[in-house]
Length: 243
Ligand code: SAH
Image (cartoon, rainbow, N blue to C red; front, side, top):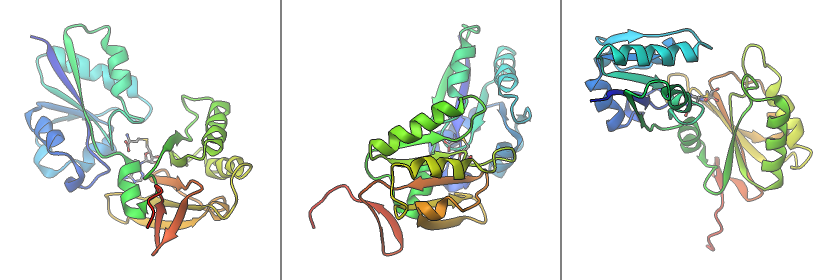
C-alpha cells in the first residue's frame, strides 16, 4: 500500500471556514506539517498531534519532511492557508513526488483568500476575474507587469495576492500605477486584511486611492472591472441581469 500524504487547505484562519473534509483528514493524520504561523491557526483539537514546521522560504525542506515522515509509516498532512493549490504547496509536492513513487498525494481544497475576502466586500469577483500574485520571489517582475496589463486590457476583475512584504513595501503602488495606464482612477476597488482571523479590516476605495494605501502581507486586494459598482456600501460586479 502506498503512503498517503494529504495536502490540506485549512482556509483563511477561522475554524468555521475550514471544510469538513479538511477537518476529517487532519483528524486521521499522525503528523501535521506546515509553516509555523499556520500550525498556530489550527483548532485546539489538532494540537496534540505531532506538529512539525520549517521556517518561511524553506518550502522544499517542508515538502521533503512530508515524504520522509510518510515513508516512516505516518499518515501525514501538509497544511497550507486558504487553498493548497492556489499559491500553495500542492504543485511542489507533486513535482517532488516524482522521486517518491511509493507515496500517494491527495489535495484537499479550502476557502482561498479571494473567496473569503470577496464575501466580506460584497461580490467583487462575481464575473470573470484574474488572480495575480505580486510576489517576485519565484516570478520575474516583468511577467507580473505583463499579467497586470493583460488583465486590465481584458477587463477582468482582479484579485491581488501577496500585495506587500517587508522587502516589497511599494509593490502595490507600482501595480496600481501599471493598472492606471489602462483603467480610470475612479474604478472601485477594495481590500481585506486578516480574513477569517481577529482584527479583520475591510476597506472600499478607488483605484486611485488604492495607489496611496499601505497594506500588509495578510491582505488581499480587489480591483473591479468596468461593471463594478459600490452598492449599499458593498463592492459589486454586475453580471448583466436586467432589473
Ligand atoms: N494559499 C493561500 C494563498 C497564499 S499566498 C490561499 O489560497 O488563500 C499568501 C497571500 O494570500 C497573502 O499575502 C494574502 O494576499 C493572501 N491571504 C492569505 N490568507 C489571508 C487572510 N487570512 N487574509 C487576507 N489575505 C490573506
